[in-house]
Image (cartoon, rainbow, N blue to C red; front, side, top):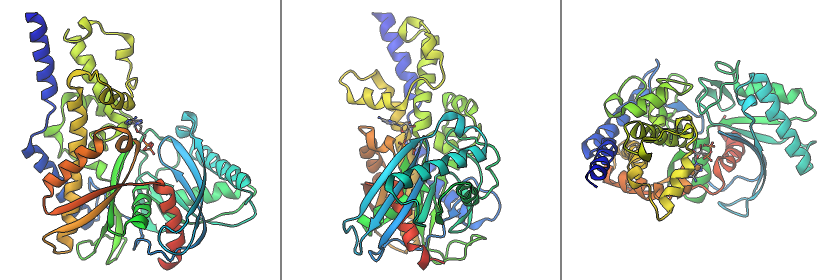
Amino acid sequence: AQRLASRKRQVDETLNSFKLSWEQLQLVKARMRAALQAGLKTDGPSEVKMLPSFVYRTPDGSEHGKYLALDLGGTNFRAMLVNFKKGLQQNTKLYHKIYKIPLEIMQGTGEELFDYLAQCVGDFLDYMGMKNTRLPAGFTFSFPCEQTALDTATLLSWTKGFKATNCEGHDVVDMLREAIKRRDFDLDIVALVNDTVGTLMSCAYEDPQCQVALIAGTGSNVCYMEEGGNGQHSDADFSKMCINTEWGGLGDDGTLDDIMTSDDTEVDQNSINPGKQRFEKLTSGMYLGEIVRRVLLNLTIRGLLFKGYVSEALKTPGIFETKYLSQIESGSNRLFSVAILIKVFIVLCGAGMAAVVDKIRENRGLDRLNITVGVDGTLYKLHPHFSRILQETTRALAPQCDVTFLPSEEGSGKGAALIAALAKHMQ
Ligand code: ADP
């Protein structure tokens, strides 16, 4: 019994070493705040890129007509037809189809990837009986891009397991247009849209107070309406514009080293982009399960779990999916304090969010700010405690902001269609 108690104490000690103190969270918030500012001001590389989206406003209800939305996010490609009626939230009609992206396509050549996407679009238009209509389309492409216009965007780097060749450094709208030219239909791609920006637009369609959007799924990212004055981005002279923060890059120049544990570092080192997207690796679904697996493995090697028996399964990278953590938390038999590991992910996300909403409050010179954050992503939606802990942390760390989180109903696709509808007003 004594040995058991001692083992339990050692397990608890290890897991407790992951806990973050209030001071550490304040530090993360301050670092995110500084990185947001630095990304806006500098022309050179910065860890948080603060990419201009060329979307200057949120919807106002005047949008109407049929638009196509194409959405390449993580594991799936979605084609969607949206029919807007005038007036906010008025009988919007949606039709969509989902296509799985095979691993060999994700990691093959760029041409194969875009040919595959064009093939899916063709299939969808066939299915809708609309192959002969040249629809305006918004292309949601959720990877960091340097945009120089609403419909011009160079892929900076793949994330989330994609590594198709000959795409980085190329204009992805052009690549899709070229792939469509090789087929028997036509499309007018008017906008390239990051998924955070699409989510913001679709949530702002429901709630005009929505000025920020968060994605917590395979990846982790935020965008918000920046109100200029502060921004001097080389490519974009603006008074108000939606900025895709790419906040997942925080820490890439070492600013998070003091809060990363050895397990976090190992997961980073074994990923396909070591040293990159460090904050994302501490807040998103793609890495959470793997960090938990490593912690369990190391505890087992030390003889503290599973009687010291290291199974083949436990040694297999990627085998512990993030969804199991939701199942563990929902069940009555909670796997002791693994919850601590998940909580760290959520509170870090809250610290980042507190920095964003406080920046918006200061931009506007307000003492208090009422603001809505649109949210999408399976980690947020399906984890039983994510939304509650995120809200509590954000409110505690940004006490001058009344933050409401609004889960996105239709995802970024509807937002991309809204941007396509707004495009003629934004050139
Ligand atoms: P994407 O970001 O790929 O567009 P999602 O928002 O659906 O798509 O996120 C998928 C990610 O969500 C998966 O990589 C996984 O980490 C995580 N996930 C899947 N199911 C669950 C679940 N039940 N609970 C928590 N996280 C989950």
